[in-house]
View 1 (cartoon, rainbow, N blue to C red):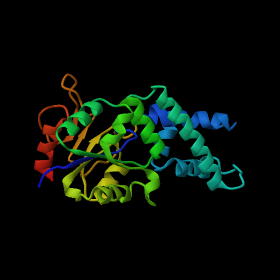
View 2: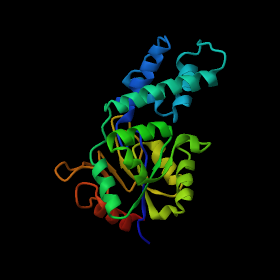
View 3: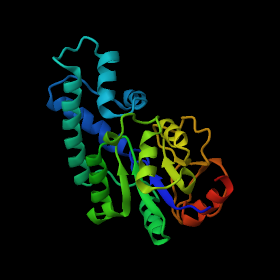
View 4: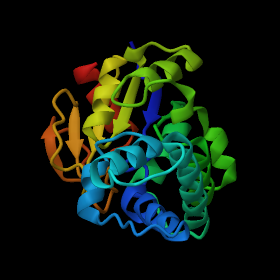
Amino acid sequence: MALKALIFDVDGTLANTERDGHLLAFNLAFKELNLDWHWNNELYHKLLDIAGGKLRIKHYIKNYHSDFECDNIDIFAKNTHALKTKIYVDLVGAGKIPLRTGVARLLDEARTAGLRLAIATTTTEANVTALIANTLGRDALDWFEVIGAGDCVAKLKPAGDIYTYVLQKMQLNSFECLAFEDSNNGIKSATEAGIKCVISVNEYTNSHNFDGAIVVLNNLGEPNQPFTLIAGADCQPNYVNVDYLKRLYAKYC
């Protein structure tokens, strides 16, 4: 049994897109629509419990603006989210959202080692494409054998559907992969699909429950910038590279 593939979540895992991109884009969309809504960091932290931007908008209206009126709430949420996505893509294109520590290096090392790569996310494919193209270059889109985005499946995370979708497309068994996530919804999704999970937390998720993760880190680290081990095995080196992952895989998978 050998490790064959790495499957990555996007928002909060590859980049701090929630804080630096999506939150800002939501507020800019509200402003463009002449809505007197503003999501601050504290509120957005709570709203992130709802997976998927359209569902998040509807949840916000129901729980914070129940007096809001429109002809069709589903169409309103869809159109507002489409505007927000356009704004987000523009922000990414302007270079406003860098990758998290260690991400670019690990992707490059994994490719060199012959590991297969994929994406499993609840965000739209347009958001994924924009982030990868504007941080790693458009050619890097070909690094990922499958880009499983939110619209590919009926049930979003924490359901395991998106990971099952990716596994089926890659014709892999769950025990041949490792997933990379940052949230409780993410680890639930990967676990439901039978995939062991590496967690790198961020400011929105550092208090989440990550029972079942093989390791929980503050980031993936670099040779000159070690990660902080929050929970799990104390393997060497103190940054996530292919050798580190193979040690984890041998121990837990």
